Image (tube, rainbow, N blue to C red; front, side, top):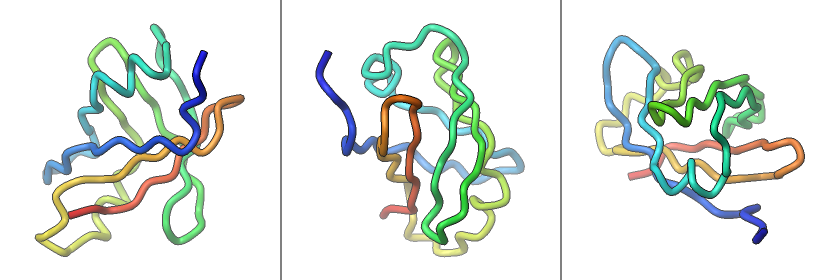
Length: 96
């Protein structure tokens, strides 16, 4: 299996009351998961957040408070980067 450490995925940023985000099918395929994955995301401020990736409906949940910190209307997505594979950890940052 080819390592995906360092690979980034763009997740569309949809503004709403929820922190539910739709993850790309490519991310689900690359992770090779078929069940929900509870994992850690490192935010730009250095803090870690626990999130849930659901491959069945391609959703990511758990970044609600952080998503509200972005008031820049030019930000259209989140760059989600694989930091490690065993266990999976990610970093996230806002992207235009």
